[in-house]
Amino acid sequence: LARADKSLARADERFASAETTEVPSLQRHVLPLMGRLGCNGRACHGSFQGQGGFRLSLFGYDFKTDHEALVKSETPRVDLAKVRESMILAKPSSDDPDEHGGGKRMDVDSWQYRLIEKWVAAGAPAVDEEKDPHFIRMVVTPTEIVFGKMGESTQLKVVAEWSDGAIEDVTPLCRFQTRDDAVAKLRAAF
Image (tube, rainbow, N blue to C red; front, side, top):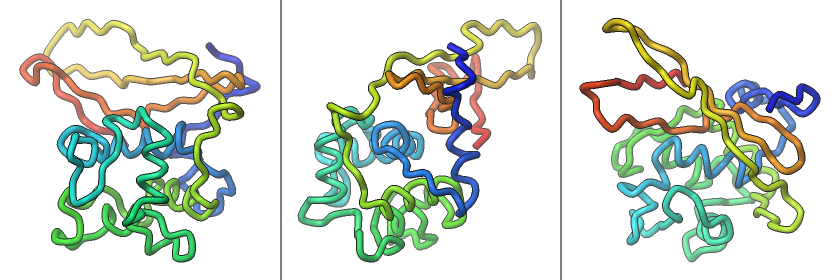
């Protein structure tokens, strides 16, 4: 899985600076980040009825429908003319609890905000099923964890491989859950 010539730095590193010129992908970056932030989950816009008049596919599986909901719906969440006023940026970065029912999800000066902002500024490009790279596989390491005593911890790493040969550490775009908080607790590092 380690082909150094096509390895990409993590999204939180690539979008840490406002100077980046990279255009994020809806499939590879925007929808996974929305999953990480909880936007397309069952308790939010990913529920079968959506939230606040806005609905996304559960966990971002339907790129076409999600793009249409974000860009072409009656109340689009993307404003190509006024990027920073786009609801996709303004609502989840607001400190006003009445502005976004899901609460604040990101800061205006965060890599998450910049990633979405760059996508909107680039015209909010859709996924081109024919031309865009397809997901090949994902590897989570370590594959097995056995702790010897209470309080030990480890960092999980998630790497995605794409059909164009790109290898990307997508850990900051992932949302981790435990089935039993009595056995293991998760702490977000991003």
